[in-house]
Image 1: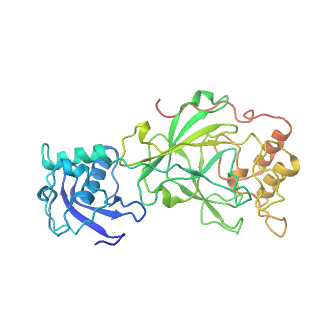
Image 2: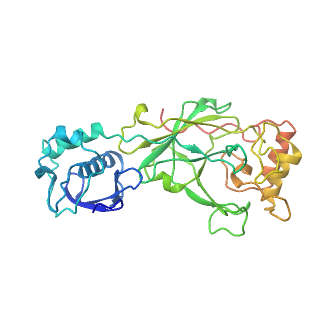
Image 3: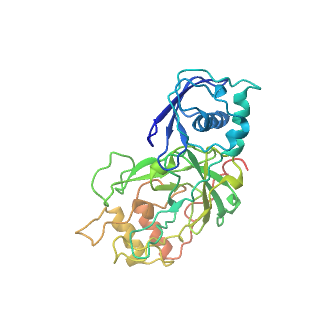
Length: 352
C-alpha cells in the first residue's frame, strides 16, 4: 500500500451518500482525489474532498480502523500532512452526523487544506525565442496540476467595443472536445494528415466552473463569442479543495489576442511565425488561403497554419476555415475594421 499509485478504500456513512468512496493518490502532488462514483457537484464535491483529505491524513496503517477510533484529536489533524500511508479499510462506518467527531475533523480539514494551483501556461510555437501561439479568436493554453481536480477561470479584462460592456465578466472553461485540423472538417474521426497532429482540443466558455483533471487535457484552445481581436483576458486555476475566493486562485496568466486580420509574421520559417501587428496579402491572406486549401509540403514549404490561427469569422468561431475567413482577412488588409461584419454582440452572459 505504500507505492505512489496505491489505492485506499473506506466505507463512509454519510448524509449525502451511502457506500464507498475510492481515492487515488497523485504521483506528482501526494494528494488524493475521488475517482468513483461520479464526481458530485456543488457542496457535495467539497464534502467528499474533505473526506478524502481526512482519510489520507488520519486513517491508521492497519486494516479495519474507522476514523473515530484512531485516537487523533482535531488539533493533531491540522498538523497531519496530506498523503499519509492509507490502508485498505475493513468496512467500519464513520459517523458523519451533526456534532460527531467526524464533523469536527471535517471542519478542521476544510479550513486548513486549500491546495495552491500552478499558473496556466500559454501554448507556444516551436520557433527560436519560443513565441506564444497568439490568435485572434482563441486562447491557447495548458492548465492544471497532474492528478488534481481543478477549474479554469477566464476574466474579460480589456475587451474593445462593441464588447466593452463585457469587461469584468467571469466565465469558466467548459469540457474540451476534439476537433479536426482539416479546413472543412469539424469533428473526429479526422481525415487526411494536415499538420503533424491532425486533431486539436478545443473548449468554449460557460458560467459555472468545471472541476476535472485539466493537466490531462494538454493544450486546450478556448473559443467564445467574447474572445475577440485586440482584447486582453486573465486565466487562472483553482483547486477543488478551495473556496472560490480570490486568494485561492493561481497566479494570473494575461493573454492578448492579435489585431483583426493579423495571422502570421511570414511563413519563411516552419511553422509560420506569430502575428506581427501588420496585415499583408503575401503573408496573412496567403496563409489563410493555404489553410483553406489544406496545402502541405511539398506543395508549400511548411504545413498550412493551425486551424485556430485561421478560423476567425462569425460571432463564434465554427472550427472551419472556409472562403469567408479568406475574405475577412482580405477585408482587414483593405482597412475594413472588425466587427463591421458581425454586428452587435449578444447579451452579456452569466450573472454579475
